[in-house]
Image (tube, rainbow, N blue to C red):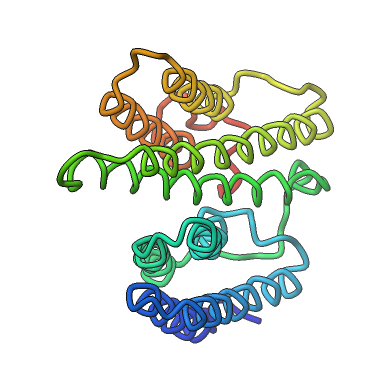
Length: 261
């Protein structure tokens, strides 16, 4: 399996996800489930064949992590849809997945079999995969926050705030698990659990920002709209942790998390 064949799997998956999003708006629940899951199966089959072809998990380059993010967005979408039946969530996950797929199509990266020793750890794959799922769920919570803050007309119901909170709970839980996997990986690869590397520092900042949001929401006098703003800020910090760190001078040539060079 080569990267050149990605476009065929991507088009098939996107068409199925689009059908699923349309079916959700039309309240055709069965079609939404079947179409979205079929698209996920097709997309994951490419990831699996790439894994076999590369003889390593496709998680090394930014392009490969975007591949997983494109997969986890519809997965998070169908999970949220099955729990709360929010019609917009599949449309959101489909559009955002399309963005990341297009980035990979227009800016392909080298996908070689080479895997540096630090990445040859059994903790590497679960660390990145769990993190990508956490990012997808937290992305859904951010879209929900933007919707409530900027586009919702009238009073926001407690149920809508609860949905946003639940997405954050799930996303932060998986982020925490991902950080624990990362600590175990770091201990095996570099001999210590935490080193305050620029990537690790921004991961801690992001984790604390979501934790602050959760605790603020428990205050009796908390302001819900301020909390939504905090949630959007947290997602901006998440982007810094994920890819923005690559453009910071502190990470140039010194970060142990730079693998694509």
